[in-house]
Image (cartoon, rainbow, N blue to C red; front, top):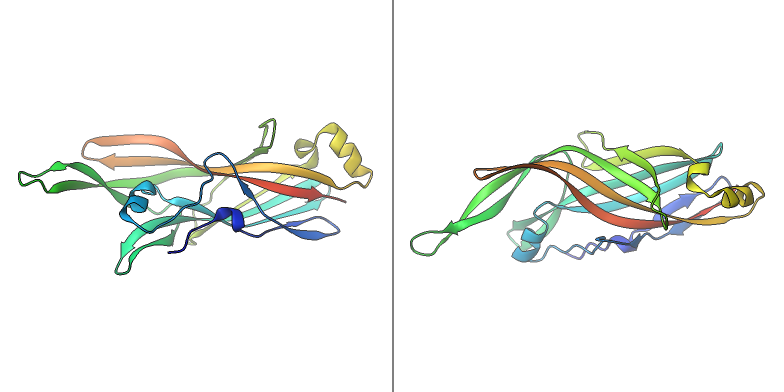
Length: 208
């Protein structure tokens, strides 16, 4: 399975008057995910997160965000290992090592993972001010759509907003990551915690 390189996704950014292609930049733990070996299978036992597309539009002094993502499960098949797309709310399992038998054979236990809720958190680059936290909706589709409308005054500084209203094009960066609250259940484990996936930096050019 070829490498999933999130930084090469082509995302669209639209203003009221123009459009352009932009590329998100990986930040924090926004690493490339591969599914080629048993090590990858274990590394991504809680799945990987792929951003499929991002669209932004400006209308009535607001920034409209539409982000489509999908979870990826690294699974073994007849040809080795490969990613497959999964619904973020679909339960899944991974094998945890428990010990060895008397003849030194490994013993594994299937650990069940379920998702309680998931949020896509978006914040300003630089000062880390959160501007939106978008909840995932449970649907039959493997693709999760995150949509939100935020006021431009929450995205831009006072000076940037003034320049924007005077007709200048403003360059702005937003960071976002997925925060997924999950249950992990096994014979010797029962935990609930939040797992983060990402993050990515979205470089925008905003103009009237």
